[in-house]
Every structure is written in C-alpha cells, then in structure tokens.
Image 1 (cartoon, rainbow, N blue to C red):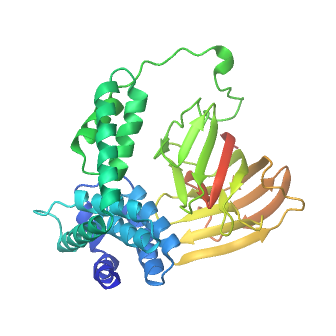
Image 2: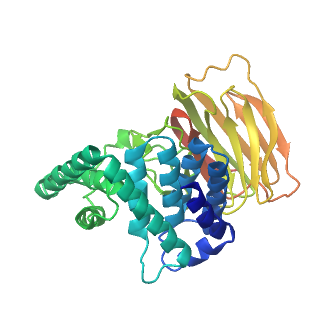
Image 3: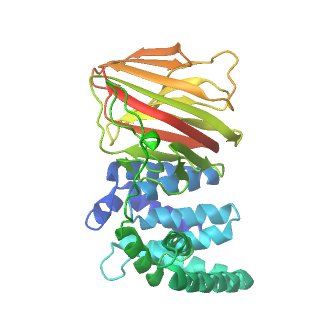
Length: 371
C-alpha cells in the first residue's frame, strides 16, 4: 500500500495533479490544494496518519474533484483502522476518475482504490452487507420524503454520498433539492441583525453565513447567528469568506470559546489572507497562547506569541483585530496582546477565515468595519 501511494504522490509533487484537474474542477484554489496535498503526502510518508488524513480532507474541500487526495485519505484512514471511512474515501476516488479521459496518475490511483475496495469488502463482508442495507433504507427514505420533508431528505442524500459518492439517485435528488430555493420567511424587526453605524453588513444572518465558502456544511453549523464547528476528530477545517475583501485600514471583531477540548494540538482562531498562498493567522493554541503565524510559499512562520493571564478556554473571549495597512494589533478581552509590523505594507489584507482543530468551538458576533 505505501509503495503504491508513493508512486502517485511523486507525480502529484511534480505538479501534474492540479493541471490535470483544471478542466473540470468545481471550486477552490488549485495552489492551496496543491500545498495541502504535498503536506499530506509528507505526513503519510512520516506515518503521521492523523495529520495526513486531516490535510487530505482539507485538500479535497479546497479543490474538487481531487482523486489523489481521496486515495491518500483512504490509505491514511485504513492505517488508523477506520475501515468504513477508508472504504468511502476509496469509493470517492473511483467515482472521481473517468477512465477514458483521466491522466495516468489518476487512473493508477483509481485502480489502487478499486483493489483496496475489493480487499476490504472481502475482509469485512458483514460490514459491507450492513452498509448496503443501510444505503437501501436511506434511498427508500429519500424517495418517500423528498417532497414532504425536503430538509431531512437532503440530509439523507448527503449521508448516502459520504458512503457511496457515485450514488446517482442521491446526487440527482440532492441537486434538485439544493436548486429549489425555499420561500424566504418574513422576520420580525427584533429578529433582524442590527448594523451599527460605520460597521459593514452582518457576517451572519440567522442560520446562514452570506458570502462565506464553503458555507454551512459539516463540520460547520449555524443557528441563531451562533457558528459551531466540530473538529474533535482531529480534522482542521477552514471556512473562507468570499465577498468581503479587506485592505488598508479596517477592524474585525468576534467572540469565541472552546466547547469541548480535543487535547494536544487544539487550535482555533481567525485568518486573513490573499486567498492563494499567503495567510496570517491569530490562533489560540492548546497551551492557551495567542500566536500570530504567517503561511507563505516559503513555509509557516511563528511571528509572535503571548500568554494571557487567567485565560479560561470555556468562557467567551472577545477578539479584536485592527489593521492599519502593514501594521496589525490583536486585542483579547480589551487588552492588546500582540502588535506586529509587516515588511510588506500589503501583507495584512484579503479575505477572512475561521479555523478549528482538535476540539469543538463556537464563534459569535462577527463584525467588521473600515476605519
């Protein structure tokens, strides 16, 4: 298994993967996906299977379809003895590859994924039978409830596709349900998000994140303007904001807290970047230190850090990030904990993102304004 993966990974490192996908990808940034893919490959070779699985998932979320990431995820999950998830990842790889037109590297990955599927299905016959029975019942539920209860039918379709990505009926019904927009309900004035003078449009409205990508989907949920992300299983997830580009002088505020601590490597926070290859993050790590990091083509740099006194992760804490062109100040609960001047005066600009890893976290009261 490792030897087969290494061959596919070598091709990916050569940069052929992203170029081959450009013609039929749905969304995302190929450079970010390529970076995450290479990072995952390195972790897999180092036998850090948790990190590899996390980064393979992030690569797939960033740029899909990505067959090599799906295959690598299957390998990592199988090493972690999470066979049912590995089967889903291998199936995803096979479903993403068109044998007639896909590049050779993708076809090899699909063949290895098919071989792994046959091996796992022979080894776990009872699991496979139970899975197929479960899919049959879910499909029946979708057929009976897609009109009467479209919300649960959509959830059922998404569950089917996580297990069997090539399930045509679930994909077709899901596309129909997504494209049919429900009639907006009238809200009372007191339920509407209030926009204070000088502040931009609300970043959260009710149960929605307007302008955010990928939007509300697992592990992200939103209810009554409260954003929750469940990354307890070790997956790092980022939710980028598409339509608000910040530059020059601006201020961003948010409140955040830890709901459940996943232990070592627990991290959450806010990112600001150009959407491609350069990001700055204000993170709270597992030792409760506030850290300013920079992700750039040359690698990750830890720029500054501070440890607030008496910091209690389970309590709500107020973040305030003030940018004045190339200068950045970070305030936590009203006290400035970090200040940094970038060499590049345009360093702190771009899009916002929320990040979470190894835990369950909540964000609320997200606001921004030009200064």
